[in-house]
Length: 328
Ligand SMILES: [Zn+2]
Ligand SMILES: [Zn+2]
View 1: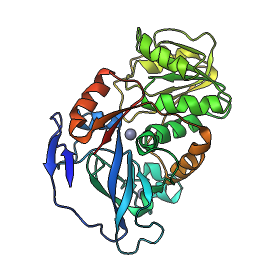
View 2: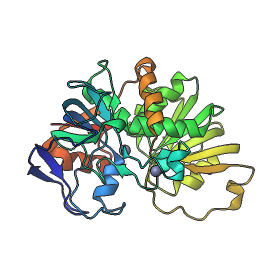
View 3: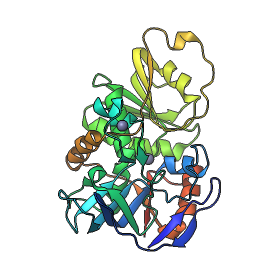
């Protein structure tokens, strides 16, 4: 198999040839057909997240077909198309796992971080954490649903069913999917981008946002809730200033720069700040079973697997709208 491997933080990924591995008990091996590039991958490469101490293969928005089954795997079959998300393993016994909050597991493994991911021609996964995808939809178009869509879905749930006027801060891969979901649910979406990024503001309006502007601008009406996808802590007080009394600000990223000090008046009146961490398998089942009916159109830019470093650089610089997807 071939892979783009991260040998140390803050270095370029290296193209490597590795021996083919067989799946162990309870595991599957997939031939990767597409793997989305998530901002979390940038945080891993840039050392914003602690480096696990060994070379790793990033990538946790994997679409592929099963080409080998480990012992004891009974619910999946050879040739089946599956998606492999960020949550790669949970312990099943810690208080969080026992309380149906496996996203907060004390001893988890994460795909493309603490276990090898999909920047490769093949990947091995714990069968219990792979989602059957069915045959509807194109591999590349589906890949961003596996994290941008899923984490966005969890963030949208945390924003609350009563959040009719919804602000999305950082209009990248996740926001472009969740805007479509939210509008389909009858919510009104307001898109916030880097100040002056008129191309992304146009993109947000194209997807149905009622208004789009810079994150330094006030929306035309007070928001019921805001979801922050961009890794900029300064957006927390900005979003708090934009939500109504009792409104929520949901931080959906795994890493954010420090949140600057702000007057208590911004939080007063029962405004809430929450964060979203990881996903549960139930989130995946809920979202992926509904996704085909939601008519989500993902905007993707394809890169060859060998060009993963260029894809990451383009993501860092905001050089495309929507999501980047690697194709082996
Ligand atoms: Zn656990
Ligand atoms: Zn991700």
